[in-house]
Image 1: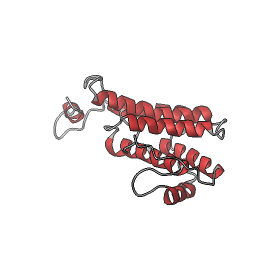
Image 2 (image 1 turned 30 degrees about the vertical axis):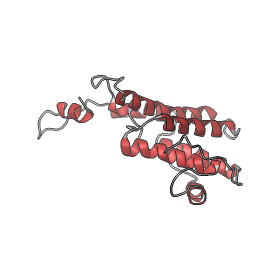
Image 3 (image 1 turned 60 degrees about the vertical axis):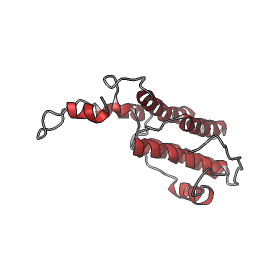
Length: 183
């Protein structure tokens, strides 16, 4: 049974409201614990400049700054538009690249744990969706609230960390295009 079938099954009748079987608040527990629920982007101008100057119309950026933001936005788009249905090794590598680059910079020692947990939360949702779509989680056991985190607060928090990294590294850091990445 797919998600829509499951949802229809929870409906009392066509004219009655759907039973409230999903605890929507549970999907916010980790952002509440990280104290980033409702977080809004603080470095929007920096992010716009990075996007304009370092992210090409198509393909990868040849700078670390551009590639950090490009990969985060690919992850955000996959979660918000597709519910992580396409989660794969590319998205896994995106999380690793963002995490290793930001945490390896030494700029986030005070925020290290929260930033790391934020990036790992993105990965955890993607892996859960992949497990479901690979048939490792049954329809009966699936929790649709765990497929993808779709609110902007989590992604905006990570985007601000990318902006801080870019502000500290104003000169473009060149990188080679990774031929194994197709997203």
